[in-house]
Image 1 (cartoon, rainbow, N blue to C red):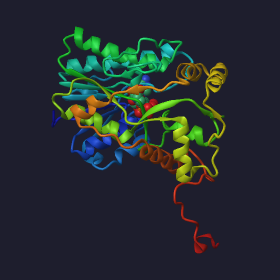
Image 2 (image 1 turned 60 degrees about the vertical axis):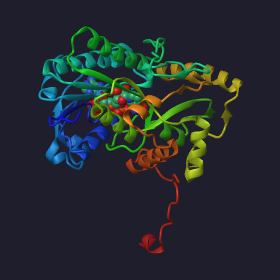
Image 3 (image 1 turned 120 degrees about the horizontal axis):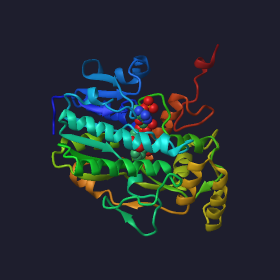
Image 4 (image 1 turned 45 degrees about the vertical axis):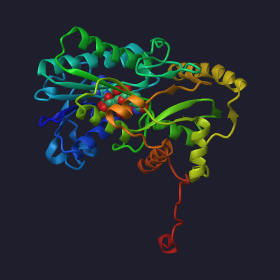
Length: 363
Ligand code: NAP
């Protein structure tokens, strides 16, 4: 579904969206990105300096909670990619801070898209809309829905499943006039175009700086942010794209992530955890400790420790031709990027660092 009209990308300043904007520009599209405050244009230099942005990127302001805020942004667009949604684990008020912006924001965007005669909306959903707590022996597919999250239990997950359900209901009941495609990534990691630190990349900072006291029995399905961007663009270019797409590659345990970082030379000068708490007794200890954590993190630990989520990513590979980079490559790119942006500080060692030359250190 190529288009000569601008493609609207909501939340263009986000970690995932900035890569979607980059990829659209690279492929010759015109892009209209929404940001929360277009007036602070200087704040978005990382977007306006992307190759092609000077000629083909426009930024407009829109807030998810303001009715009609996206009317101007989607006017004249055939395609909308809706990524904007709060990605936060610990919030003061889950309804106000997560669910309202996710659900009301999605409905606002869809309402504007319908009024503007948009042909396709690609929604950035999440594995959180597919499953809350991993179930032993179950391989998740696009037919699965998260039916367990709530305002008290994994509220970020609840915001994502509520927003995706609201989007499908809108399309079913309101003669939307566009088709909807949902992309459901798991843990998105990799290099960041902007200076902000995303919640998913922050896990590596936390591992390297000693926030995790021990190696826990946790596992994540990783997907490179560049592959997630490719998936969104594929979802607009494949006319036959339909329904939901699980978007994630390798599953790695925390122990495996730490081994990759150590192998790459990040052990020296960092506080990577060493103490293994990966036995059933360790799981129990983590569950007890989880009550000392902020509510969102505590709930996540209690529902995920000791379990591995398995999923089938065949649909996105077959239908949209998306390939996933090996998780190791994405992890190391993410960590190198944390160092580059100053999110983790030296004396962290990394892979193949050259010793300083004698002349360089001479005053
Ligand atoms: P992010 O960097 O925090 O991006 C979130 C975007 O949403 C930002 O542009 C943010 O704007 C915008 N936003 C939040 N609240 C808003 C509001 N009230 N009005 C307007 N814009 C608002 O996170 P991300 O990882 O790129 O997430 C992008 C999407 O991917 C989200 O829908 C998220 O749920 C989904 N996702 C992410 C992951 C992951 O691992 N990262 C996995 C699965 C799904 P500001 O920059 O102004 O805050």
